[in-house]
Amino acid sequence: MDRDALEETLDALMFKHKGLYFEAIHSSPKLVDAVEHMEIRDSDVFILTYPKSGTVWTQQIVSLIFNEGHRNGTEHVKNIVRAPWIEYDFNNADFKSRPSPRLFSSHLPYYLMPKDMRFRMGKIIYVYRNPKDVLVSFYHFYNLIPNLKSVMNWKIFMERFISGKVFGGSWFDHVRGWYTLKEDFNMLFVTYEEMKKDLRSAVLKICKFVGINLDEKAIDIVVEKATFKNMKHDPIANYRFLPSDLVDHSKGDFVRKGIVGDWKNMMTVAQSEMFDKVYKEKMGDLPINFVWDLNEEDAS
Ligand code: A3P
Image (cartoon, rainbow, N blue to C red; front, side):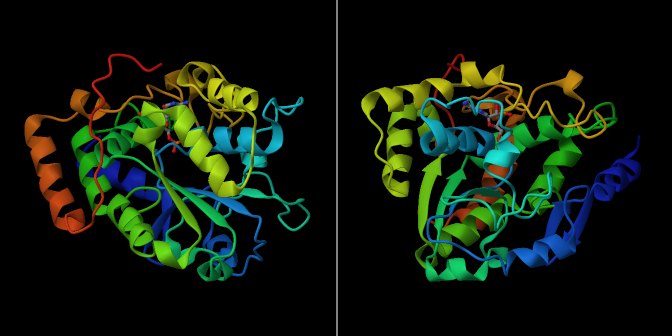
């Protein structure tokens, strides 16, 4: 497949609305617009991420903290039910009838969020990850889309990522937007890399933010159930319930490699330098420091 045909195939998977690209099967401009008017309760907790930054991992952690600690037989509840998406409709969730505290997930930028949240209503856990690993993870994710693997092209995908022509739009705009507006929202910032480095501390940080006190044993259970090793084989974390015309499960897992620094296995030195230049131009003025490598051999 030549470049034009591939770009056309990738474009057909999305629609553009209010400056952003959305996956076309589960969302629509109407659905995105409705989010703005969503009624917010102060106890609502939103897991907010740019795609491939650790969303499912955080869904796992937060739902363990809230519902279970030990799960009480809810281990088979899908993550899209535990913490449904607000801009994607997977299962017709009725948000209003959900008991508090409600958990939600979103990849939206700040300007498309429910407007009440601008008055610091609800709580947002914003998880972000170094963009080179996000790019690599995203590339592998696109390869799970049926019929795309044979035609996917790393170089073209990288260009599209940098210009924001992927689900969720531009990583740079997403992180910059949320970071710059952080005082307007009630937010906790957590990096994927800090979760990798010290999961227990990250869990404690999240517990403190959402105001839940778990004893040592319950924390141990949350940490244990959220390790890469345990999640790698969890059918729910891997979205195995999605039909095969949406995700080709034979091509790989959502919970894929789970390391910091995988970009080194994909990017050439020239590509990495080019990316650094773009990063500096777009993000250089922000006081954000990413960890680009933890010198890991294996995910634990
Ligand atoms: P990789 O593709 O680099 O392995 P999201 O849920 O936002 O789509 O993010 C997916 C990324 O989070 C994948 O990264 C996936 O492997 C990683 N991930 C999921 N669960 C994890 C865990 N328990 N520990 C570390 N990484 C995890």
